[in-house]
Amino acid sequence: MDTVTILFHLLLLSLISSSLQLCDLSRAQVMEEMFKDFMVKFNKSYQDTEEQAWRFQIFKENMKEASRLQAQELGTAKYGVTKFSDLTDKEFSRFHLNPGLMQGLPSIKEANWNHGASLYHQEFCDWRKRGVVSKVKDQGYCRSCWAFAAASNIESLWGIMGYPKNVSVQELIDCSKCADCNGGYSWDAFLTVLNQSGLMSEEDYPYKGKKNKLCPKKAKHPEAWIHDFAMLDKDETYMASWVASKGPITVTIQLPPLKHYQDGVVRNRECSPNAAHVVLIVGFSGKRIPYWILKNSWGRDWGEKGYLRLYRGSNTCDITRYPVTAIVEKNPKHINYPCPY
Ligand SMILES: *[C@@H]1O[C@H](CO)[C@@H](O)[C@H](O)[C@H]1NC(C)=O
Ligand SMILES: *[C@@H]1O[C@H](CO)[C@@H](O)[C@H](O)[C@H]1NC(C)=O
Ligand SMILES: *[C@@H]1O[C@H](CO)[C@@H](O)[C@H](O)[C@H]1NC(C)=O
Image (cartoon, rainbow, N blue to C red):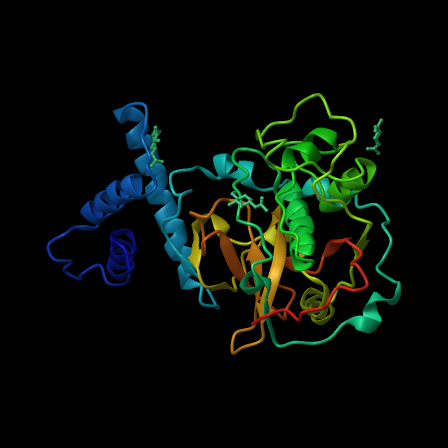
């Protein structure tokens, strides 16, 4: 446990029993210490003492909110100090989508060809253990989770075939007809990849975190491409079989309390219907507490090294709403390794 965590536990204790003597530290002092540690841990600096005082106010509000969430958590998730702890909810909204946008889902085809026949069931699966999931990226101040999840989906499918990739998320943002830094859809990202006949590499077309006016012509030497994309059955058992048999898939969830999430399995009543987020399922477990392993795009200094776990089995945060995946056809000679666990 680092100091910030210890202090947060002290704070929780102090909330439970305000008569508790915390080594002579008052609650206000604990808060101040926590904020100082937070600034060091996440390398925060503010323009002047006025801004710092304002950020400290927000920090205190966020800590109150985190302990409220902690009190009603039914899984194993821990809430507390995160790199977002000095942001207002409005500022934080740059990191997820406006769900108003999510209503216009076109009728995209279902994965109704013979894929179902080759699916198998597994109790655990974690594609990271095969080293086929690319590094967690950071979307920055741009609502581009849809593009990062789609890119990660493509990267993982190529990784499973033995060709690890980093594809250009910026190309997706620049070339999408209906998306930008204010949001988008993973299916639209796949349409864009099909229309571009593939994507350049991240190295050749690096991420800028804002939409450029120009979309480049089709790449002469695309880094990776896809053959199709498909909407999967809205069923958690089916989705798990697909992930185990074929690879990671993108999902759109109602935002759980991720602003304050540190680690553990989230099972919380408060998934916001007013906020949506697109992430990649890279695995799952059926243990005592069943969960999905989700790859996020908020950097490695958030959550479980950039990942979160979400309770599986009761359609938590409406995770079955839009399960979509790219389809990359494998060389028939390719050996199918099962998902490791
Ligand atoms: C910390 O932040 C400052 C300015 O905000 C930056 O110049 C510096 O590189 C950062 N250091 C680390 C380790 O991120
Ligand atoms: C992808 O990018 C990461 C750095 O973010 C790098 O470590 C890795 O080697 C790259 N992988 C490929 C296949 O280019
Ligand atoms: C497909 O790409 C062409 C250019 O190669 C572009 O003119 C067209 O608008 C794109 N269509 C879609 C639906 O993205």
